[in-house]
Amino acid sequence: MKDLLKDLVKAFENKTRLGIMSALMVNDYLDFSSLKELLDVTDGNLASHLKLLEKGGFVTVRKEFLDRKPNTKYFATEIGKETFIRHIRAIEKLIQ
Image 1 (cartoon, rainbow, N blue to C red):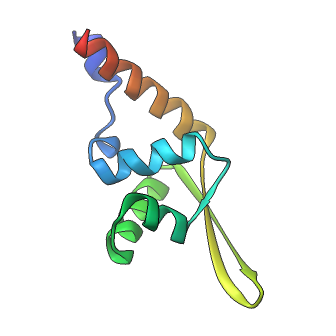
Image 2: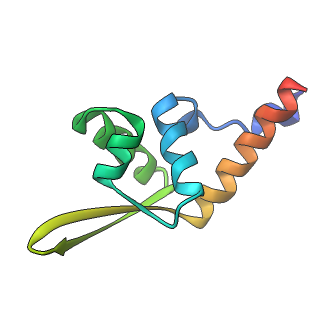
């Protein structure tokens, strides 16, 4: 049991952050607007959760302009992907 709990990551315990990571695992990247719509959260709520994931090294951000409009894209990092997979596997083992 102790071995399973060590793979659970506090950063992924929030449903919004869990949703962000889940979405980024199955997409190469998502922009801010797409994540906001997908997760049905406010700008401020999404921004704060993304910042926490970015500080943890789980997500990286790229800002660019499309037709003179700012566009912010989010990507799961390799460490983020590996850690998230371990987190999900630990949850699966706990419920077995």
